[in-house]
Amino acid sequence: MRICITRSEKYAYSETFIRDQIKGFSELAEVFPVHSGRFPEREENGKLLSPLPFWALHKLLKTFIGRNNFFSNYGMKTFFNTHKINVVLANYGISAAHMVPVCKALNIPLIVIFHGHDATNKKTLKKYHEKYLKLFDYASVIVAVSEVMKQGLIKEGANTEKIYVVPCGVDIDKFTANLQLKHNKDFLAVGRFTQKKGPLHTINAFNKVLEKHPDATLTMVGKQNGLFEDCEQLVKHLGIEKSVCFTGVLDQKDIAKLMQKSLAFVQHSMVAPNGDMEGTPVSIMEACASGLPVVSTFHGGIQDAVIHEKTGYLVEEGHIENMAKYMISLCDNPKNAQELGLHGSEHIKLNYNQDKQLKKLYKLAKQAITK
Image 1 (spheres, rainbow, N blue to C red):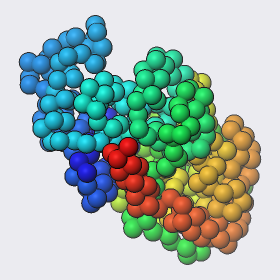
Image 2: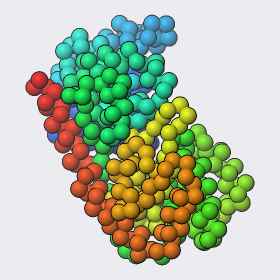
Image 3: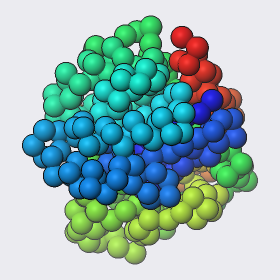
Image 4: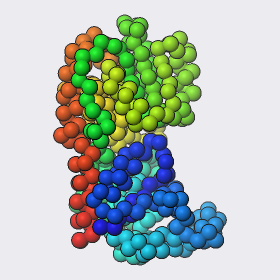
């Protein structure tokens, strides 16, 4: 198998799951990654897919006639022919939609993986409605990372016979379970400061925890953009600067270390005003694999990755009081936190093991080629 895998950026810090995907597939097949934007423009080494004059014309013309113009398609077609690509795996529906004309022209099977905003953002769904219908018609396989997302895509027109649920999965060798009894009251949140991850709600819930446990701490890891300034201002307004730490971006090793030490993982995911939703958040699965109980919401794929009252606690979106109540209960009863973490790590190993998920995708890719 000679597979081309697309991604939006080569070094997007929040897309470690795609880097792991490429690495995993490389052990099973010949992989040719491409990246840069909604319509890939560069090879893994940064080389342009099109000759420089063609690339410049593509940049000029895409504003007026769209990304799928002759000059952009030329580079992708040449790349596919040169490397004898026999299947394309496109991460994100938007990128896959732009790949349809090229794949169709060369009769190359296309697999699309929807990850989150590409399947739920109202503006995106409206803008790409016609392109998505063409994508659903041509794609050999459509992958959603949660059951909720699958049902949403079916409503948008996806063929039920083509669509599968395959969450990203966790590298359980990197995120190992620390099942020791912990007597600290350290909470951890990892993720971008976006509306759908509900960082302001998480902070407000934590503030209520401090009323009973003033020695509790909250560490928030993630790129400091989006709602970050609002979060920083809220922390100052509440007067809890000494209890909340913003670390900025950390690599997987440092995040894994924090998960080893923390009492629990918290994230108040919710539907954003623009409709944007989570798929199945990788950071939550990594926390479960690390033996952390998770306090989150009945949202997207979270309600599959976290089993309420067995591997953590889930609340309805917007219910800050209930979130705080469960966080307080973990501080009050570290033995319960330990037991929830044990069940969580077992659940992830059984159902969200990265190797198993990659093999599912590989099997689907083989099926696409032989259809």
